[in-house]
Image 1 (cartoon, rainbow, N blue to C red):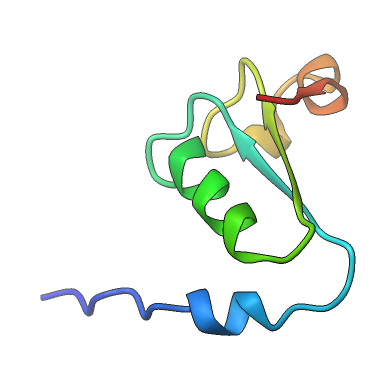
Image 2: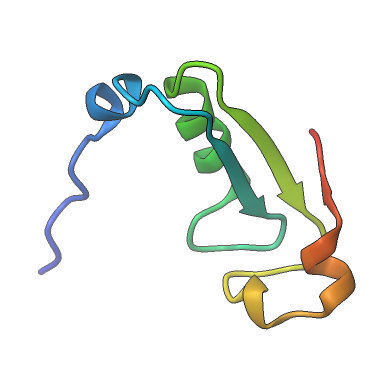
Length: 71
């Protein structure tokens, strides 16, 4: 049986440095919905999505890694 993921929203709200949350459009494990939710909890954070990339997006093409888009 797996343990539930801890709720880290309160800790995220205390982050006081510039942050950019990047999600991978085709990630079925950590979908962009979760990335957006995380960005929304960090004061001043930006959010971007990398198209044509899944959960292992860092293994994708250089073009996909270099071209995040703003939602």
